Amino acid sequence: MTMGDRMAAYLVLMQQVDDVDRYRTEYLPGLRPFLAKYGGEVLVAGFDAEPAEGEPPNSTVVVRFADAAAAWGLLNDPDYGPVKDIRLSITSRGQMVVAPEFMPVT
View 1 (cartoon, one colour):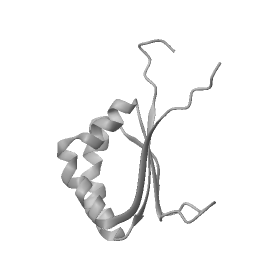
View 2 (cartoon, helix red, strand yellow):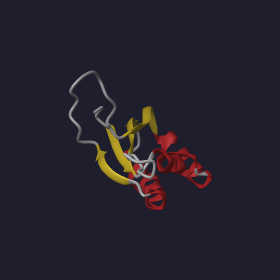
View 3 (cartoon, helix red, strand yellow):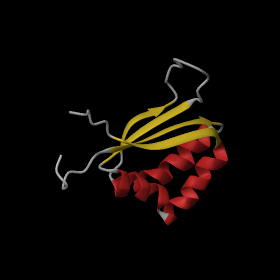
View 4 (cartoon, helix red, strand yellow):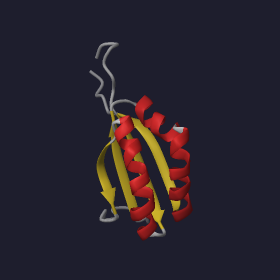
């Protein structure tokens, strides 16, 4: 990897969506412009994940970004604040990370 290469980053969110209707009709439409603005590609989203260990919340989301700066750009965008407030008002047990793409040690 050269200095000019960017390493992809993934936003991984697990949360309990307590009001699925508002999540789908208010939060997701508000989020979409920010995903487009920061180049986020939704890889996993929904309520269909099967628990493999523990008692995970009902929603899992994985979004790929070109790099961590893009992921943090979305999360820290002041215009995203009101949209985030909607999500926080209708969810609980949220856990989120921004993780770099795995690069094997050679």
